Image 1 (spheres, rainbow, N blue to C red):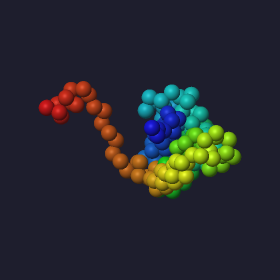
Image 2 (image 1 turned 60 degrees about the horizontal axis):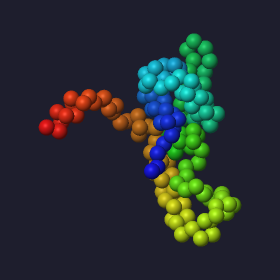
Image 3 (image 1 turned 135 degrees about the vertical axis):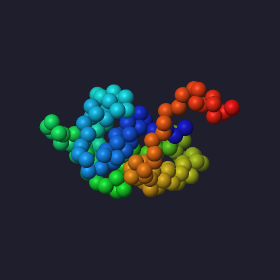
Image 4 (image 1 turned 90 degrees about the vertical axis):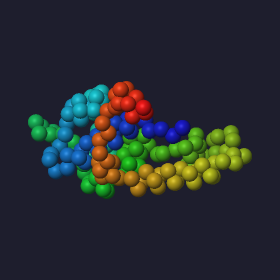
Length: 151
């Protein structure tokens, strides 16, 4: 199953939060972590990695925090995921593999799966932080609300 890491989830949450703030200043790691119930230590590491990869700017001081470096429409979901988790992979081997896999020479799905990886990257590359920010927030559901809708 293809699945984002928890760190990538947190990075996307933070990026959407910052995109929704727009020009209203920066947000601290503590503010973001508190609003979304994310462990502050983990979020701080994620945000620093996004700064090192050039997706966020960090400002010190009492009004400091984090801001997007580019417009949300210019930052793709692929940019964020790869900044946190590295290259997207769907197989244990990769295009840069030197044939170390014992199945490499006789594998009959490697090339089709590499093509699939390219399609996944293209889809992630087309989806931007602006698109994530445009989706309305989902209201938390309660068991009673779920039961009521199914009756």
